[in-house]
Length: 119
Image 1 (cartoon, helix red, strand yellow):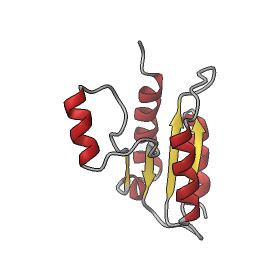
Image 2 (cartoon, rainbow, N blue to C red):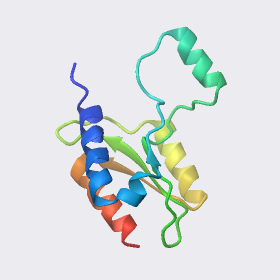
Image 3 (cartoon, rainbow, N blue to C red):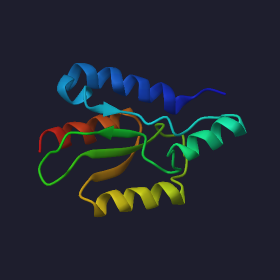
């Protein structure tokens, strides 16, 4: 099975490194997803891993926001649903002053990042 989301996210980080190098230095992907054995999954949960946390954190304050958080999904025609946990995280982050959103595909994420960096 191809990991389209992962491939696109890799491309996005390559683009970010060139287009917004200062932001790139303050942007990361928390390794919350992926398949793991039960022992590793339980260990990571005890260490603070939480379901639904967005995929991309741009830790650069802009305008009225503390940072940009993106729940990244592969480009259409992929139709991966946004989970209830992901929706809850986005809402909580928005309440705390972050710009938190869902982007479907690299082009949507590039647009969101460009708009955010231009605030």
